[in-house]
Length: 263
Image 1 (cartoon, helix red, strand yellow):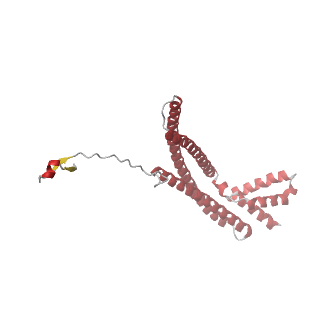
Image 2 (cartoon, rainbow, N blue to C red):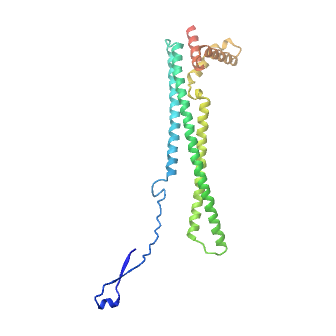
Image 3 (cartoon, helix red, strand yellow):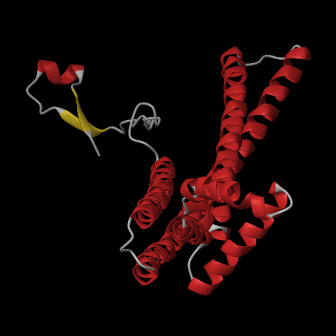
């Protein structure tokens, strides 16, 4: 315990030793205010949210880039098959198998992206719940201040002003989170549709569609009208696709090449 020296008047006249008396020293409590996220480091939950956003967006971009790569490979393969007389069906099918294997990997990437977006959605929902709880608590506090003010009782004006500023900010945060969740749901829906039709998402159809129209224009004289020609030729393409074990886009190119050779 700290001590202090007390010098009595009688001691000044003589040479007596100073009297040392114990004294309790009052220790003041010091409140330490932690820095806010704006002034200091981000909160752990904010870091978790930021990391989840980065992970989900990176997974999504990987899916989109891989899907585009497969689509380009399909385009290049179709063009090569169209222009090369040496590329036979056997070689073509081996190339197609490689692109199908890439689609299998893409499916894994899609499922991973969906999982990451679902995790991100959960974090946003938890954040929404906490802010909503804070909003209602502060709204009750403000309503209480209003009622006390109406009754003529003393209130904290600074607290009232603080709450009047805080509550709209919390509402705005809830609106922002709701919008972010909608965006996440849209991404998840897009990814799920990709899993349901991964071939359609990654296929290339421009060549086959143009060639189909050319085939119809060339052969329509064999049929009663152009609609019958479309139906019959499309049926023939589907037959070739099943027989050769190749997609319809390549079967269309195959039919066009055969017609070209026959003159």
